Image (cartoon, one colour):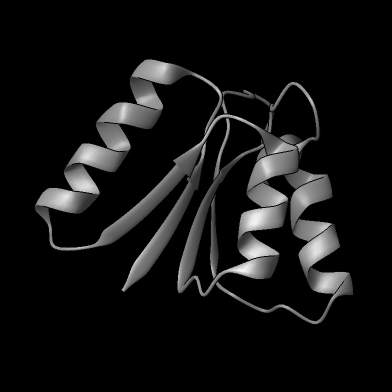
Length: 88
């Protein structure tokens, strides 16, 4: 199973990638929303882990782009936002 991690914080991105690899997953990782959107659209990915607060293209925009292309891969969203409205 191939997992795409899109997280702009380098330490968290590295930690997630390391843990997923040690669990047996193939992992591609980037800190850029633009690059992550491209990778998810152009390469076979089984699951994406996406941070909402990316600096160049928000995680929501990445996911909306995939959905508008008909790409329905499962997405796990990461956020540091505290309000329940933001999380839902």
